Image 1: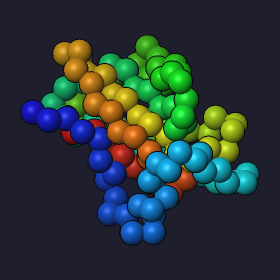
Image 2 (image 1 turned 120 degrees about the vertical axis):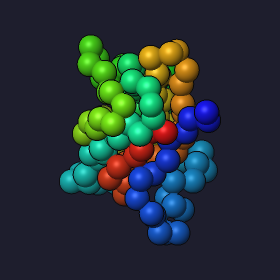
Image 3 (image 1 turned 180 degrees about the vertical axis):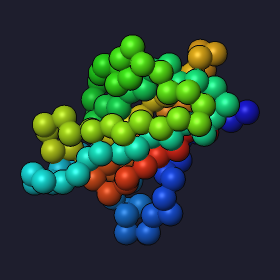
Image 4 (image 1 turned 135 degrees about the vertical axis):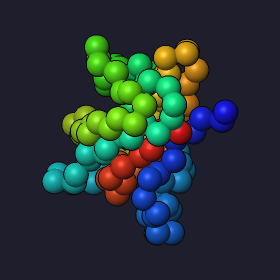
Length: 116
């Protein structure tokens, strides 16, 4: 089964244009909401979830920490890392060791992401 992260909301063409990785990290001024609800629509438990700003050289820390995201579960994540960045790459690691990566998610305009 092919696992992928997809935006749960139908985004307009304008919003999608903000997700395109052009090699530039887009930033906004303070006050932009960077909260994204991550839904696990896969049949596997997510054991680790990473979100790093586009262009970062590492996956940073596991956002779930000692928690897990069971199949059918959801978690709200605040991606405000203090840099003002809006574009993030996501990586979900499943209980069976497989993973799914989605790149260039605009957390300033996307309110939810579904893991399949």
